[in-house]
Image 1 (cartoon, rainbow, N blue to C red):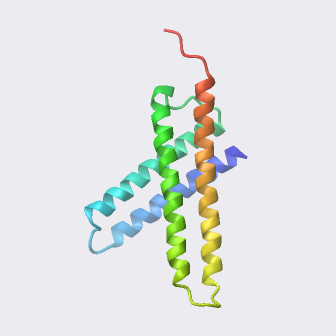
Image 2 (image 1 turned 180 degrees about the vertical axis):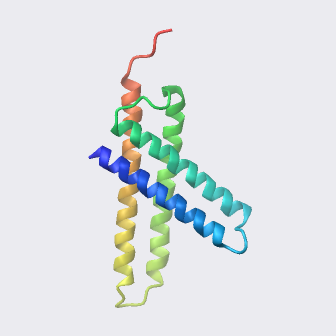
Image 3 (image 1 turned 120 degrees about the vertical axis):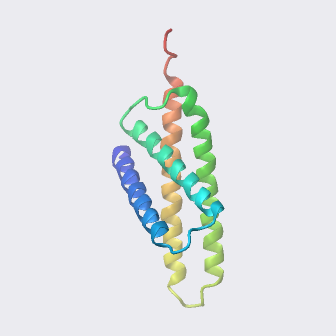
Length: 140
């Protein structure tokens, strides 16, 4: 299951990067420096999460443990913030939906899918960190 999820996450990240690059390139006026830097941070975090998921799913010792430990904490905080922002965005959108509309249900489905993706991404990265912590230190 983890291998399929890691491949799915990498494909989704690639699709998101291509789509995001296309949207940014097609805008007549570039976004602000803050927006561009936040997009860059998000891209780096998604890339690091993909590395962790692939390393866990395929039992690789990808980043060294000394480097992976702080990265896994940063990725965990990032996933938590993205999840919280998703919930806040859902609450704002839900309050603006007129009564009797199906938009609220659609937003709820997207929220649940987004939170599940964030949770399983975090879980894979956390499990990879736990596996690396249990390995003996290299000699030398």
